Length: 184
Image 1 (tube, rainbow, N blue to C red):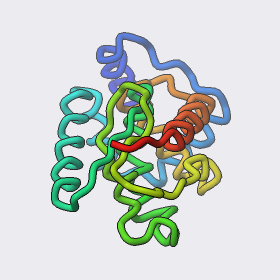
Image 2 (tube, one colour):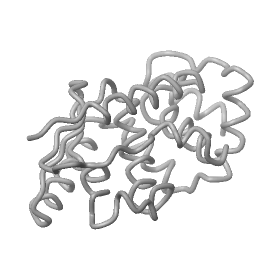
Image 3 (cartoon, rainbow, N blue to C red):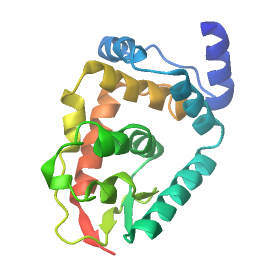
Image 4 (tube, rainbow, N blue to C red):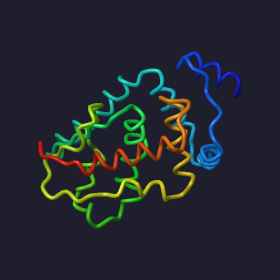
């Protein structure tokens, strides 16, 4: 099974999956406990058609924004950040790490969690006044299984050679982008 997966990834990405460093391996092992079949299925879908998947996610977010009467976009810098945001961080904002954060009560979490994602690195643009900041880097200090799951999702969907160091760089970049707020 592992050899078949390697061949499929090589055919798709056009590159061999490199052996990850020890820290990345350790997190991946812990992350496997957090992964469900549906997570692997979603990663395969993203791998097959990233732009179609992103378009579908954004259409869902636009419908929700229209229904709730707000606007929000987040311009990320690369596909890896888009996958991290849409498969893990937005869920942690709505019903995970930040679920009971009083600063995000009264649906303020929606401006983050339901943002339309673009690949232009422009940061957060929203119709909200006084939107509280959130510490995105907090996800790196949570359960190692969560960190591992983020690594697996990116490795399985858009970058088979993604490492823990790449994850730290992308989470820090997302934190900067979220702090770079402007009004729509």
